[in-house]
Length: 456
Image 1 (tube, rainbow, N blue to C red):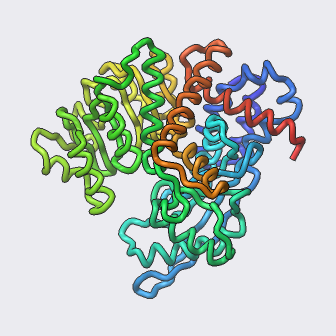
Image 2: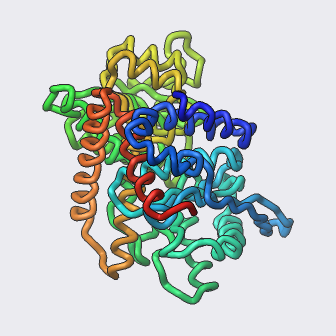
Image 3: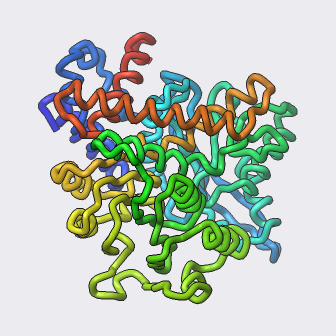
């Protein structure tokens, strides 16, 4: 933090008490952009930073619905429209009991800079509810989604705010929300992304975040002088949902090998590698059966399974030796400082964040200090929102591109994001520091747009 940003951060702490995730996200950006503010005093004079840390609009509403037993339930709904200077608000909806204002503000703030890095015209937003879809019937999820959209529709539009999916919100939930929006508004617009291809969704969207994280990691490895990229690399992956699954898929296609995946109960170590056949089993286990990853260890020989902190040396996937690339793909702050030290000790050379802010701030600092190529989530996992942006384009054009075309465009976007972060870090005297490079590059784009549009 510097003399320009320090008083602004103190004001953020005072105004947003009891929101540690938001504090962490803001601090990371403010720690990075001081050199950019010194180079551009016009941003200071216009109060750009004071405005950029304050959401433009926070919407909080009630969601009443009726469960299968006929009992009325009430959940909270949120939409954070953080900054729309460069395009319509864009960001997912998260359904999870942990959802509250602070987490969504952190996610929307991160989303702002992530979206800016894609080069597509999208602002930053996020939303969701403390509703837990786990254990709910399709009918209960439908009634909840319809009740949510009965309020949310007032605040979103294809040219104003375009939500997508996130944790707890997949194709089923998107479909129910889209159907209710269409019925209420009597229009067929691309107001949500992550839709099924049958009604306007983009091919390649399920793969996008995981593939993007792998492509970003490959560019980081090549920038270190290793032109082989992912080929022959052993990788650690956390999570077993959409991001983790397609991370494993692309690593396999590029000639690498993933030896771990996890869920909320524990993790597996498969030293032989999670090959195509095993990955198909994981996808069926998690996407269809909604089972636990422990079942993988019962299915295949030679696989170890541990609950967290069960084993004195293997407390989590990040203690597993023998890998050179790590993909944290589960949730925020899943990699603590002790785990970052274990990763470095065991020879990790690159970390590409598939989840949003999965590494604690002290861990990020440690990776950078030890010259590990660290791809922060706002850059490394931008593949998902980039493909959502491509879905918006297809909806506006009334076209549907092939999967190869979508993924080809996405691959180019991820290479451009890497190159932008890499070159910006060099320009500001921090070569190889993708955190500073991504933060400054994203900030400069948004700041210039805000300056051009006046004090609003």
